[in-house]
Length: 424
Image (cartoon, rainbow, N blue to C red):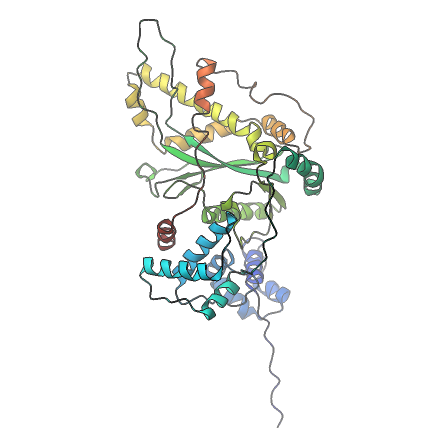
């Protein structure tokens, strides 16, 4: 009696599973249609949908060609090791297998995990993380004005030609001392200029806008995970926490997925141009709608539209708001110290949202054009539009730039990597 023919079951890769989830969640496709598209049983799609959070988490940190969600014997050690590896490679460090094994041992010890790396484990981990050995191809050349000009002439126009101006985006981080006040004042000859110590309370802001100025968002990153002043209140802009108030790869991935979902709901295909900071180069970042491309190294000041005056305009408006609030507080009988104390981390997002809203679309278009993007033929100085400066101009310029050297990202120590992994 001949045996029954066994039905061959199609095994979907993690990338295909993510695509299936996206079709159901963001495009509203019935599960039956998705099953037909990928040529699998409807039960397979139901299982993928139930495990969507696990699949999406795996998609952000693993080889998308894998079909099974298998993890190592000590998941947290491997997660910490992956963070360390990505951080080292973003700095162009040379890494060998022995270094990986040693670092895995160190993370296991810090986490209290009974783990001993073996050759088999190393092979499987590298396969899961899509890590391959490559020969070093020589020393990278420094990029400068010439590299920026070559990028404009040879790359940029080709890159943006298939996108409408409203679908070309730029994103960049910048630090903000949100309690800072001017360092000087006008006073009579016999008076003393008395003030307090410089205010260093800070937020890292991620600015996001398109080339015609019709879309702009700002995201805030602070140290506090759950500020008390947020309790029961509506925070006016997206807020994230990190123990150093830095942008990290995990935060960048989270924000990009949210942005990708938003663009997907609007049925758009967009191009996002960013600098090549380590935190932006996240392996396995699974976004379908947003195409992310990186500027050449050391060309940000010449090619990044947000650095051509957009962020500066925002800071001018923000400082104006702070000066006006200070004057109003003093007129109401508060001292400078009392005014500074009254500014909470909830007030800052309100001021930030207002200042970012005040940046005009013309300013954004002009700065994109200054960076080399062919937008509208407009010509004006984005700084000259801001004329209502309530303090002496020399001091005001210094005040606007008081936080220009804040680090927006950096290298995490092993202890910080462990803490991040365990907190997750």
